[in-house]
Length: 314
Ligand SMILES: [Zn+2]
Ligand SMILES: [Zn+2]
Image (cartoon, rainbow, N blue to C red; front, side, top):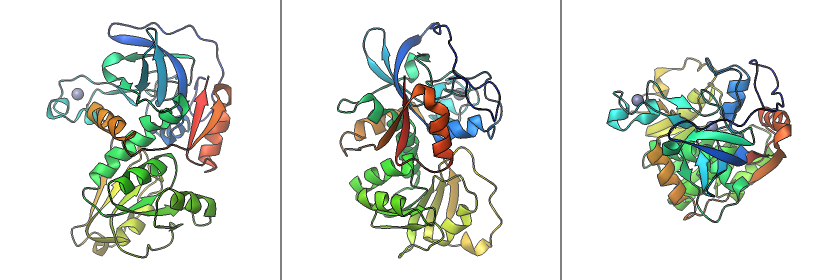
C-alpha cells in the first residue's frame, strides 16, 4: 500500500521486491501493526516523509533463512554524531525511520538494516507481536521516563497504553486511565488491564499522580495533566505530534513539576522491552485487517474506534 500524496488514501500497488543493499535483509512481512504515527504521516502532520512511501514501522517479518525479526521505527543511524556517541541514537541528527524515510511494512516484503532489527520473543503470534514494536517499545521508553512514579496516569487508552498498563502493574505501580469523556468501553478495557481507576480526561483522578503519560495527541491535555500531578511529578508526552499546547499559569508547573517529550527509540530500549514483555507477560489485544484494508484501519484509528491495536496482515 503506497502513499503518493499527503492527505490522500493509500493506493494498492504491485511493486517489484525491494533489493537488499549491503547489511540489509529482505523480509517477508507476516504482520504490521498500525501506529498513530502512520496517521500523522498520511495526514501530512509531519515534515517531509519520503514520497511515494510504503508506511508501517511495526513489522514482524521472516528472513530468507527463516528467522523471525521485528523491524521498528528506528531504521538507521550514522553512529558517530554527538547524540549517537552519547548513547542517544534516538536523537541522531541523520536517523532514518521506517515507514517515513524508508519504505515500511504495509507490503508483502521489506528490506531492513540487520543491525536495527529486533528478535521477536517466542510465545507471541506474528499479529500479537507486531504492536510490541512501537506501541510497546515507545510506551516502555515513556514509562521509563516517568522515573520511579508510583501513581501513573495514562491519557489516551489505545495501543500503547494498553501495553504500558500491564508493564506498570508488573512493576508494582498504580495505574489511572483517561479516555475520551464518554468512552465507557475504553474505561472498562483499562480496568480489565489493571487500572484501578478509569475515567474521562476531563476528570480529576481520585488521587494526585506522580507521572502522567500522554498518548493522545491533544496539546490541551498538557495543562490538564499538570493539574493532576503531585509536586515533583512529570508529564511525559509520548507522541511524535501534538496539537498546540495552550498557555497555562506558572502555578501548574511550580513545585518542580516537569514536562518532557519522548522521541523515537534506541536499540537498547528494544532489546530490554522485548526481553521484559514475555516475563510480564504482556498480552496484546489486536484487531486484524487484511493489508488491502489499510485505509479502513487508519480511518478506524483516526475515529478512535480500535480497541487495543490494529494489525495488517498480507
Ligand atoms: Zn509508532
Ligand atoms: Zn547519529
